[in-house]
Image (cartoon, rainbow, N blue to C red; front, side):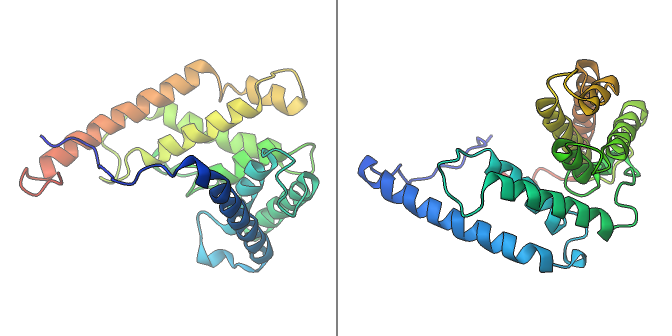
Length: 230
C-alpha cells in the first residue's frame, strides 16, 4: 500500500540568503497587491460567478490589515478598510439576490455561494451601513439546513465535503471575529443565533464526517482497484 507522501529533494535555503528572499517576497507582494487593487473595479462579475473579484479582494485586504504596520505596502490600514467598504457595497449592487440562502447543504460553501459574502459583511461591518442582519439570517438559514437534513446519499457523487466544510470555515471565521458576546449589538446577535455555539459546530462536523464516509464508500465501489489512483 503506497504511502500518501510525495518526497521532494529541494532543501531549505542557506541562512545567508534569507534577507534576499524576504526582500524579493516583499517586493512581489507589493507589486501584486497594487495590481489587484488597480484592476478589481474593472473586472466583470460574469468572469467569476461564484468567487467574484470584490469578495476575494476584501479577504485579501483583511489579511493585509493584519500584517505589522511597519511592512509598507503602499496602502495604509485605513485605506484598506475604506476599500473594503466600497467593494462590499459594490458587490451587493452587482447581485439582485446577493444575500439569498444556498439551496442545498452540499452547496453552501464559503467560495461558491453567498455564504462568503455574508461572512465578510459580518466581519467587516462596523454599523448598519452594511446589511449585517440579513447576512446573519443567511448564515443561520444555511446552518439550519445542514442540521436538519436527514439523507446522506443526496450529494452528486463528488465534492461531498465541499459545501459543508466551506460553511464550517465561515463559522470558524465568525467565531474568531466575535469572541466577545457582549461587545456590540452585532456580536450579541451572532452569539444569540447559536451559529457559532459549540454544539452547532460539533453537529456540522459530524455531518461532514458522515458525508465523507459515504463518499469514500461510493468511491470504493465505483472505482476498481486497478483504476484507482495510487
